[in-house]
Image 1 (cartoon, rainbow, N blue to C red):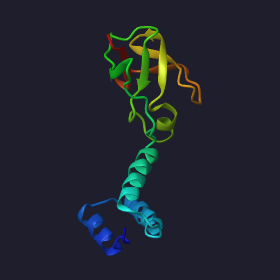
Image 2: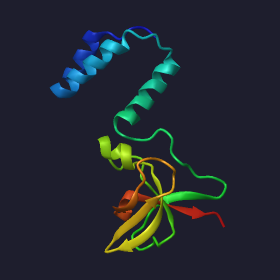
Image 3: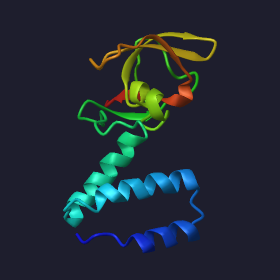
Amino acid sequence: MSEIDMDWVREQMTLGQVKQSAGTSILRLFEVWNTMNHTEKSAKEAIEVFSKLALGQPIFFEEDDEDGYWMPAQPGAIVVTDKVRVKRDRYTGELGVTHNGRVCKVVGVRYGDIIVKSIDGKNPILDGTHYSPHDLEKFYLNE
């Protein structure tokens, strides 16, 4: 892939009214990007993975399988022992790194909060963590 024209980038950011703080970051990223030799395919993958990781979103995410499927959790439909996971994009930054995509077992439901313990083997272990049901997806077994 050829080097990106920085004049074009600046023009696009001006037309798109990109804020200066974001624009400075973008220009710094392009400084490095233009020194690399990417194919179109590797560039696309790098950008997709980088954007998720930069926002604290996991790139590995437990998906549906032959045993069941994930659906948005509904208030009142979650009970102790249910398997839930935190939505992939629920939090940003450091909170996202800690919480997004985590698979947990429900250990309590109190005053609308879903209280969980992580079962995905990742650190840090979540034990007694409270979530709104709107932050979660529930695993349903195939029947």
